[in-house]
Image (cartoon, rainbow over all chains, first blue to last red):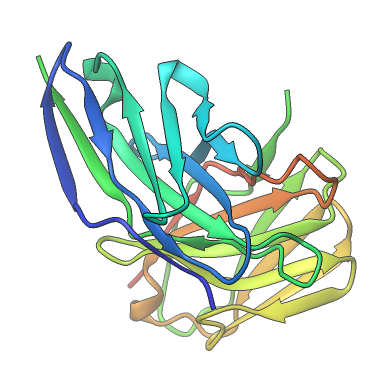
Amino acid sequence: AQSVAQPEDQVNVAEGNPLTVKCTYSVSGNPYLFWYVQYPNRGLQFLLKYITGDNLVKGSYGFEAEFNKSQTSFHLKKPSALVSDSALYFCAVRTPPSGGSYIPTFGRGTSLIVHP
Amino acid sequence: DVKVTQSSRYLVKRTGEKVFLECVQDMDHENMFWYRQDPGLGLRLIYFSYDVKMKEKGDIPEGYSVSREKKERFSLILESASTNQTSMYLCASSTRSRGLDEQFFGPGTRLTVL
């Protein structure tokens, strides 16, 4: 079974400060990890993913995430937050296709609010 | 630019009506998904299809059915709408090609059942 936890329902940060949105996962075998962002009244947009290789993954809009196998975490980070980053962020995990499934499991989402 | 489109952004229906939500993708993706999104509950998978005419139940299939007659189109059907099916419905697609694993989502349909 696979699962994802986003321990914070909401994260507040001042514009210009660094931000972190947390994600931990549980999966049998090697994980495929994803971050998506959802702006109000929109569908989800893909931000970045970790499949294999370098633990630090860079994605869209200046976001990055660090895969930490020992802590089973995949936290989303940005060095300097913008008001326009305010949105709902979802972490997702799935196992590799061989022997696994194409169906990811999503976290419950974290609302990021960036204050001017 | 890749696209997943959904037939309606907003829909209002009455209890007992049969409701069709349509989703079309132009990326030749094998996999298609229907989710519902409710505050505090995140995304919950209703049904998944990995090929034409193939479907698998997700976490919450009760009260829903699906149809996939063509590769690009995946329909969600509420046989008899109920007020507890008021929600945001999201369609997504993905490919099985290695290295291209992320899902592409449509804009969502906000359904209200009165």
